[in-house]
Image 1 (tube, rainbow, N blue to C red):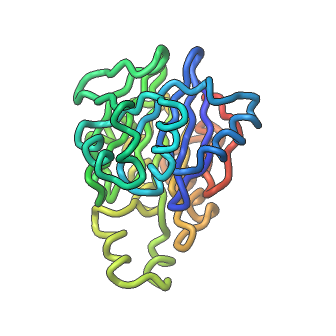
Image 2: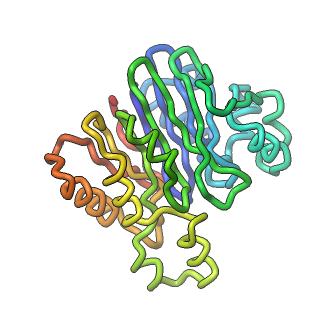
Length: 264
């Protein structure tokens, strides 16, 4: 598998996961022209895309989903609950219906030639929010973003994965000392908002296992975090477990900036 983050954060979320014969777009929160430009930089074009997975119905994850459906008619895979929400959302309601493919719960869904997908629910204040366990041959890729707290099911999937993408949204001191209204601070911190650096670090100590090779930190806040703080918090968690430096490829996925093409 190969992986690219086109953008990660409230400014827009969009990831590309490539197998030998097909590729998945995970969320469509950045512009379709921007994705075209990033694909061209990798010597690719839209024809490499096979399907789109959707985590939830907040704008920073679906802002351009309607454009992708209108332009490319790609299969859009998510839960039936989220598909019903997309049919009502102004970004997507006119375009997603013909592209609809339902992910069935508790089974491997054959989404493309390379990828089978299971979903698991995570707590977030959307209509529904899901993480993904994506199987490609013998490898397991797990993505869990926009989760107010970790769940046993999320940790169970992560503890089997060779690659984990996990939210590390905010530094608590920065958030509490910052300019956000108190209501927004409560929304972020009280279980159905986002995962802090400290929460992410604690989760890492619970799901770390010898076969984990890649650990990518996603959805960093632009106002209440820095890449350095998120990275150091996760690095200390790995160090506390006795993980030798370099054993796990630890990387921060940046806001509005594409990552390199990463071989997993």
